[in-house]
Length: 179
Image 1 (cartoon, helix red, strand yellow):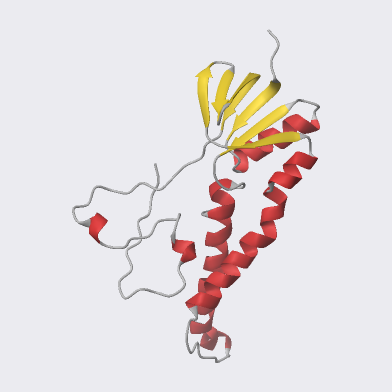
Image 2 (image 1 turned 180 degrees about the vertical axis):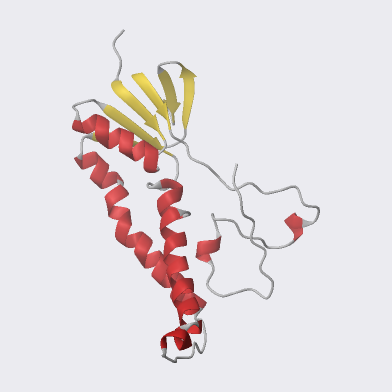
């Protein structure tokens, strides 16, 4: 059977990007389908923003133990807006590496939309039907919101929205874990 692509990758996060770039670098005709932001959770809601945020927290914690090293300093305040701006800047700095433009330049056809499997070799995306010898599903993860009574009546944060806060609310409910 003749296919449109050697490899169809559904999901433009870490795993999908590695498969797409690796396949293209070996001469495969590759389609990469992404419904949201290129880079997936790692770039946009996980590894990169969380490590950037934690860097500020570690620095603040270091100030508390400076006396053990014969130094003194006082942490006067935390400007959460500035911390989050730095987090955003770090993500923006890395984003071109995971961008549509970069992957297109590698020879990957990037298709924005939601890929739906039709059969073992066929994917429906937007109004297109495409076929591939191999299909890789690399759709990542998402936060798991527990069925806590009343939770839907209060603002709560997961990895998907915590890095967008501009100021700390009076009460902060953060849900961890994943599915």
